Image 1 (cartoon, rainbow, N blue to C red):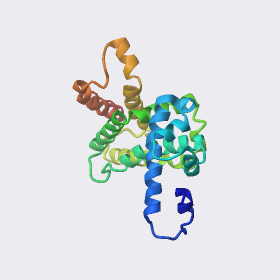
Image 2 (cartoon, rainbow, N blue to C red):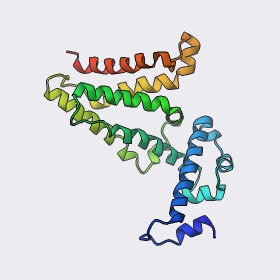
Image 3 (cartoon, rainbow, N blue to C red):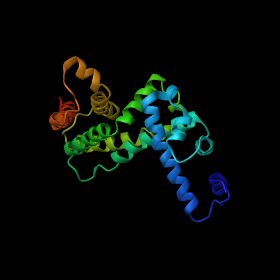
Image 4 (cartoon, rainbow, N blue to C red):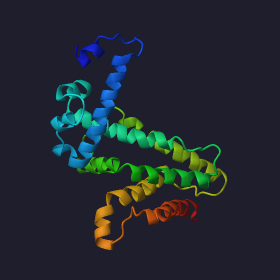
Length: 223
């Protein structure tokens, strides 16, 4: 029996069985390969045939799971953003000192972007397309709230303690953190070619990681 037919035959309320687990594994494998393919070749250059060839499935099944190339690309974008949003929720907002919470959030973003260069490439590619695919995402309305909720709560605690400025916009803080972390990975090669400095040099890693926290806190505490 075809994998798709097996999946479709299950009733919505049925217990999760091997077919569902196999489908989840297949979707994950497809997304893993598709993410790298889109990040490496861009939306226009990526080919569903090539993605299928690098997985244990077929082009037909990719279309079955995702509907088409654009939907697969959007799903890859959604998963990439969901990863960093999930990590941001792990910051212990309620118990950490506000300054330490800001440092942890900045460091978390720093670590994530360094470890996930495909995420940076995908975002860069989607900006080339002026976010025309991302705006069609069903989860777009929820992409901003998790990050801003974390930042807002940290800023509110810092203001209540009289340590942070009252006029700070959480979107601006997010932009500063994101700009530093994205630039460091996205512009690694051109920056090195011009200045002969590799921003991902392990010997400078802790320097840049600390510098990011210092920069954000200097802005938050400037009078």
